[in-house]
Length: 184
Image (cartoon, rainbow, N blue to C red; front, side, top):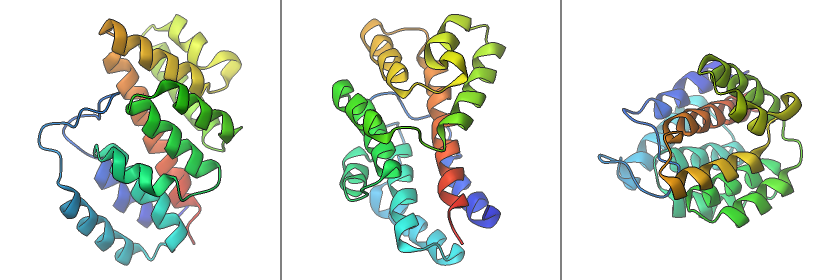
């Protein structure tokens, strides 16, 4: 794993609050131009190739609530990584049906076992056994079930929103690790 790149890009996930499950930007969201400037600087420092730059930039734009800009990038990434990012963007939009379409295109992503493991640990620690069985049946991450849980939480203004946001954080962290692992 390119630990220097990972440490550098993890700083972008260290925000005062977690992204919402929906499209609402957080107060104090970093302006797009400033975010792109600092991300460009990080790319120069880490020497990440152009393909990985698209993945990481799309992920960071999603984290920082710039959904449309992330969508423009993820549409240009024609593999499972791009489909995962595309699915997350549509889940947050919210366009739940479209999110599930993109997650179905992904198949078994290499990040899913790690998301499953960390989500299981979190939900076990919170005593959320029913949610764990839904999201991680038989120890496998089910992104479609996570979309459904986000939709339910949005409609019901559920108390599970904070837990789902923490799971979304796990998703972002694991994907960043995967994208940085693929760097030289």
